[in-house]
Length: 139
Image 1 (cartoon, rainbow, N blue to C red):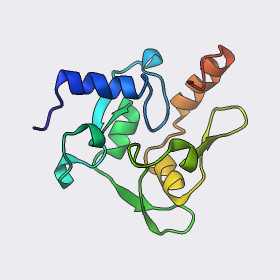
Image 2 (image 1 turned 90 degrees about the horizontal axis):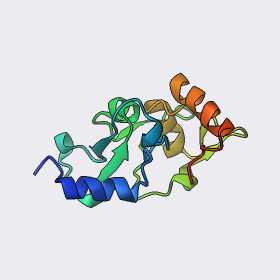
Image 3 (image 1 turned 30 degrees about the vertical axis):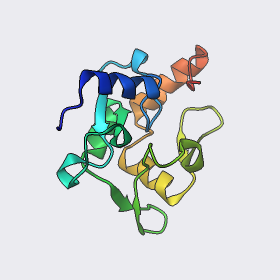
């Protein structure tokens, strides 16, 4: 089975509370539908199971594609990208002072910020507006 069932998709959406599990964008403010993505890609042997699925905005899903590893921009070592089922977001990322930028705290965090472009200009602009409205960061 490659396409998640509608009930599995709903469970993933509820677990993520309507937020991209990488950049924490909120689906209710997105201009494009979010995707249920395979954290470990099907093309690399990943399974369609609750433990391997994440809610992702279109930007994060597109930039991640089938990547699971990349080079840390600081030391150039090959590291795994952030895995939302096996790792805690707060251990690898933090917000800057005004909550507009995601800062990578670890090699995995830095690499994921770079590869998925978690601070794309459109996201930063949206975060600024939503923060001013009291809607960002999501709870």
